[in-house]
Image (cartoon, rainbow, N blue to C red; front, side):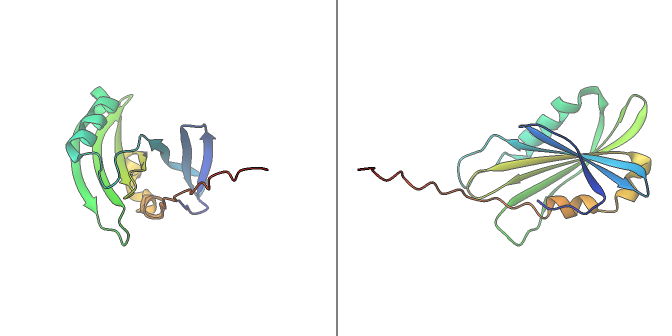
Length: 147
């Protein structure tokens, strides 16, 4: 995926990359990017299962699922977004959950979190990241026999 210069890598492990959006020196949002377990080629996690996973992840922080939608794309990647309202430590929050599945069954998940009062300053910059997701197929050539 690609991102603009206002997103900064905050932390990276083998499981997740954490980016933070800074705008004019102010923290706006955080984006966690994770590779999630693959599914069979041509399949994807159901919308119901993804929403259940969100409920489980947020627990008592979740107030309501505001919107759930399938995003249109020019490629064959399944892109699903869920907008969630809630609170963390008494602060109203908005979470944007994205699930992308390639025709090969490879999956990526994005979770963007922002204080609800800052969500307008996000200004759809999340779509720049999630819309640029590309899945690459790695072809491994069989080892040739050595004489």
